[in-house]
Length: 542
Image (cartoon, rainbow, N blue to C red):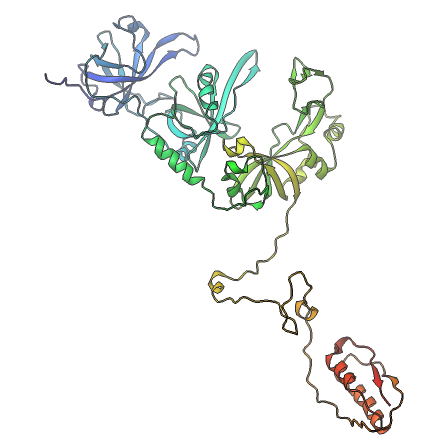
């Protein structure tokens, strides 16, 4: 039996409508009018056995004429359809082709029951994450992206103008670039369980037909009616993505087991730490590049439960102790953007450290702005943190280690460590270096905890001693011994030559009287610090 001959999606064109294609319905979504909220048709992405994709549209008036309902994921034989060119002003197109299929009243779409060639479940036109930011202002297309899930949080709900909005937020990363993702309402609820249940694993995700938005200056991917999310899909790119991601986060530093603190890490090293550092303290030396002045710089606190509380119907309520707190305590929470030579991260300065630095509480600042007719501005006193260097100690939590969050909460903020010169020899000299030890005058090794000899350890500049001729004297061992006398020399001049001249004069006077000078007296002069001597005592033996 001969195989059925089908047209490829890549060859269909506008010249005829007598096309016959075998395709899989990869995605189906309704077209809803923004003004009337009425459905005006159905959109479909069709995929053939060569992974070619094309967008198709079925007008509402032709839906009833279809013999059977088209189901997402099923394979169909599609015939007698019209092909139209895009006009060029269409927005948020899910497939990057210059044509699309348009159903007519003669179009037939029947479920395929034959054993034809296998058609993949999905195909994508993946974009690198680093290219997403460059396309932020392009609303002509939707984007297919892939990444590793990081920092997945439970859904949050907000109410604005009486309308409730739910958000599922997480990040995706390829090991080099991170992009924030927000899935809204029912669409986010579908994937919340799948993402949060695998928080301890490396989860790969492919988002097809994502919409690029910008929120608070940050690129964000959100869902559109055409968007589909695939968690750990059976796709050839997923193993490569996971391997590449893991290779990028391998540590290039070593750590001692049980070590609680890593002093003065770089930001790059901080971001690459693994699970063994969970709940441990890490110190980094950073410069505060920016203060986030648009966000709230303080929060209300339940004095009993020590948690943040929010207003409900104009009153503060604690979700833990269920109390209503009319006048809650308020604490600092200052968000900063900090950098070093290897990267940048967000660091939240805690209440205790901010109060210590600025010597004020939140209520002190409230009192200063009590006469302000409008909402309190960002306090000037907090701006003293800007452009300062600090040694910040952070505690690594699950969001940082497993979810890749680049926002850290500080527990200590100290002044930066002063950097000193590095006197280590270069690598090219290491092979020629000898093992040196501290040796004293008796050739005895000096222990490291001992204080080295002053003459060898000091870095004071001293004038070199001048060699002088020895002073001759008569040592008459048989002569009469007389009592020793103390002869005090006149005050010496600063010049060492003058000092030596004074000494020689005294020696000559002693010799004329027949006395002798002990040898130890000369030893004393030979070892004296001549520059600093003001008076010299000479012991004479008669």
